[in-house]
Amino acid sequence: MIRPHAVFGLLMATTQFLACDGQQGMRHNSGNGADIGLDVLPEYDIGHPDVAISGEVSRYLPVTREESHGLATSLVCSDCHATSTSSSAMKDAAGRPIGQFDLWQSTMKANSYRDPFFRAVMSAEVHRNPEAQEAIEQTCLRCHAPAGTVAAERSGTPMSLEAATVQGTVGAHAADGVNCVACHAIMDVNLGTEASYSAGWQLDADKRVFGPHASPFTMPMQNRIGFTPVASDHISSSELCATCHTLHTATFLPEGGIAEEKFPEQTPYLEWKNSIFASGDTEQTCQDCHMPTTDVDGNVISTKLAHKPDGGDFPPVNARSPYGRHLLVGGNIWVPQIFKNERATLGPVGSDAAIDATIVAPLDQLQNRTARVSIEEPVLNAGRASFAVAVENLAGHKFPTAYPSRRAWLHIKVMDAGGATLWESGAYTDAGDIVGDDGGTFPHAQTLNDASQVQVYEAVLGDVDGNQTVALLRAHQYLKDNRLLPKGWRADHEDIGDTQSVGVDGDPTFVGGGDTTLVDAVFEGTPTSIEVELLYQSLGNRWLRDLFDVPTADVQAFKQMWERIDRRPAVVSSVSYP
Image (tube, rainbow, N blue to C red; front, side):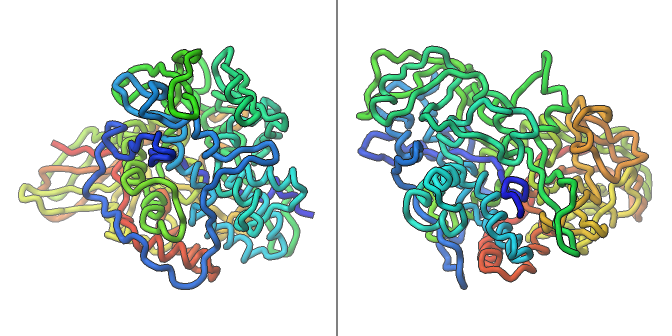
């Protein structure tokens, strides 16, 4: 028998910001980029809204109010934890709304159930392994629909995609994604240990919800919905996030059966442990970056955590600090575009303006807190250019990290005085394809001599026979993993087996904190300038082309959605010389 918790899980991307429209006339609609100090970038074409999908697609339930099985959906929590125009609670020093529900509801966490890429990949795994459908769906949904999974367990109903897409108590909790209860009711049991990884979290059965502040005001929540707020530091720990963001999957063997060793499909928590950010003066938790406790002006937030259900202030409630903005922002730009375009099919809660802001937020994260490039020791002569491109990883884990569909690469151009390109590596098409990518793998390069070489930072999966694959349950090894290592990474760390690099042997400049690529370009003409960009895709085109070969309805529906977005890569960092 295949144990559901040991099989497989999928995209747990982070991103986004949203705000809510008025419910009972009390919520402030704050769904625009200005509310988080950003502008929606005009060069991103977001728009083919509500174009019909040809063929079938799995059902997506709406978000509804539901209290059952010791759980509550986010709309229940929003009665007191969404910004109200009649209350001073959940606002920063400038009066900007920062309600927990407001910011959370457009994130990838809130929409994890309705993420069409997740649905596509899960259906592909079931297509390849139909005998394991029950285990695959139970395992995937445990992270993508955790409250729905618990509702199923507590009601004695087997969890499945069918159960998650049928209106009822299980479907209602599943449709809420990774909701308030799914995080705040996780108990401090085995956190940070292998037992807690791969969705090994345990949700409290006594209707307790945990927060970081001492002496919480318990009466309103107890009286209204029967939950008791409890102070506990574990809610602010990276170990809490590790329960779904450290994932080991099984390898299904061609001859049948399952390999003895699990495959480290995503390990951002273990990468963080093997960095300078895990302890000491430089310590930063997952929440420090993805749920910042400062406002957009850099000020530490101090605010009341809740208001009365009618929207007014609770007199006994005082301002608290720290207060984490529930942005949960990562690097996923494309799926939020799809949420906006495919509103009629996917049913996201947020307004179009709010989802636009969720697209901008990860761009801000990528461009200001992820990585930066520089040009070193440039020498330009007639017919030749020699220089080095250094990439510094600013993240607390590998970049890219987590689900292995992600890739970053260097786009390098050498130009003459008239602006004509003399030599170029890493060019891309409007469809997001790297020029010269034939579906194989670009080897890690210490030196780029030829324009056909491209420095691509990525993870490439291999099966037991060493063949490249995007099938998670066929993955047995990394054929390549030259994702940028975090600062402080050590080869002798206890988690090196899950965080090591592959395919970078002999490159002394590929170290914890970054990489340096030498360029020695020969061409016709006289160079005068150099331009370098570090580009990023949350869903690499090569990966998706292989996925699209799978003939399931969800894969083909996602393909149509993907083809309607702006697929050009995001620019993480750029530099020019002189």
